[in-house]
Image 1 (spheres, rainbow, N blue to C red):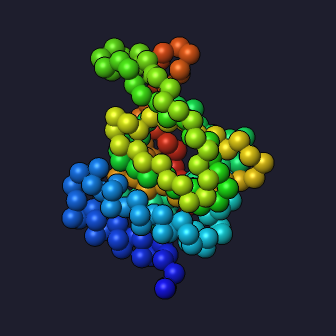
Image 2 (image 1 turned 30 degrees about the vertical axis):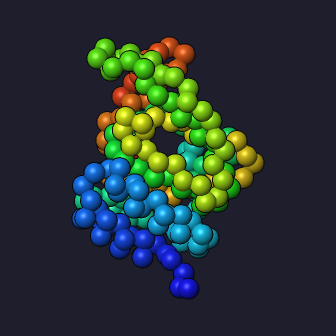
Length: 186
């Protein structure tokens, strides 16, 4: 069986995002393809498996109008507290593992700056595991609790750079707007 790589995965994403308009259907069809891609340890070039200057390395692998694919490298002890995505997404662990804590928003979002979240659970996602994100069920926090770098492949329905999203403070029942910075390679 030929090796399934990034080129084939991206071609499949183009086809699926043309055929499907709903995030749930896109996730359902893309999940087995990302699972297949994650079985190829060489699907992400080595230059995109290095930590960045800050807490993470973020590399755009492919940008399209209806989706983008990027690699994220989390150094030991690095992560991101509770946040949302404002789009459908798949996050697959390629190397090592990543602790993920999922939340559910309890309030209706009608009061600016206020957000009450309920803890849904924490999992240790290992190589090959995939997390699905679909608003409003797209709130999570992640942490590399290991002593090695973790490499993830992220697929989103929108480019997160500049996209206004929310970062949540669980203890204060509050939220603040933020946007992801530019990628390390573009």
